[in-house]
Length: 309
Image (cartoon, rainbow, N blue to C red; front, side):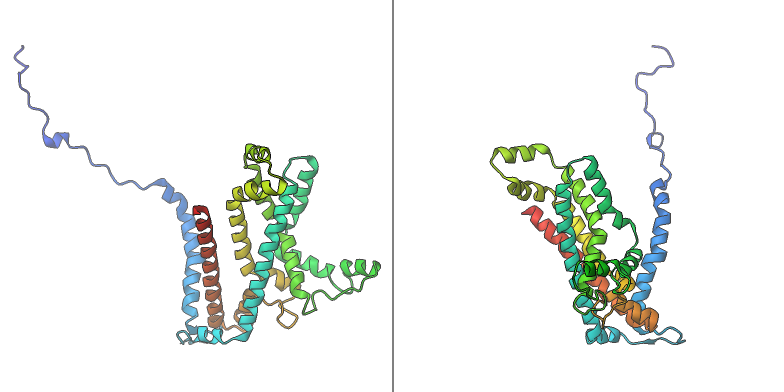
């Protein structure tokens, strides 16, 4: 043993063994989402809060002072028969479009499940209306259904049928708008359901066929359970979109005849941007927001219950 080596050497002190403290570092992911958060805050969150504040005031555009009225706008809205009519029209449209759109898209997707050249062509044809905007679709159908120059009435007349006034009839205006709404969005729903069908393992159908299940039994007990997430998504999207009905009605009927196609958003537009009663229009917007939130939460809750069941 040399003189420099001692039998018992003291280890490093506690201060020397202490791990150096790391400097706090900002996660780069927050920097990437910061622009989106700012945009959401400025253009979504702030207007929502502002509209809630406006709904508590007698806020008329052009007036210097806006009187605080509390819940008076909501009380007036509760006794407003025109609002309840608009809500009824919106609910009828939403229910009819959501059910019809999903049912028709499910039938089309089942027929076009196999990938062939003609099925690809038909998928494109069904999806094409979804690309156009609602306003453009509404204007095109308004001309097609025009009793004077419309092609639909001309074809019916050539076939010997009497041509009804589709958009001016109190009994046909809303069903016509519903039909156009289904035609407009059925392609999108079909694509979603078709993608869900193509993810179903083929051996499930083979096992069901070996057990003696026919086409309807295979569809009911194999296809539908496997498509539950896709059906929930498409139904939820169709419901939320239907409750926000505006563009199609604005382009086709402007809420007529005699308010038979006036939706809640159309009524909100009339009160806020035509009559400039922004406080009352904000109250309508908040009621619609609560309705959409409640229906969406209920649909998600029912879906979770069925999955657990």
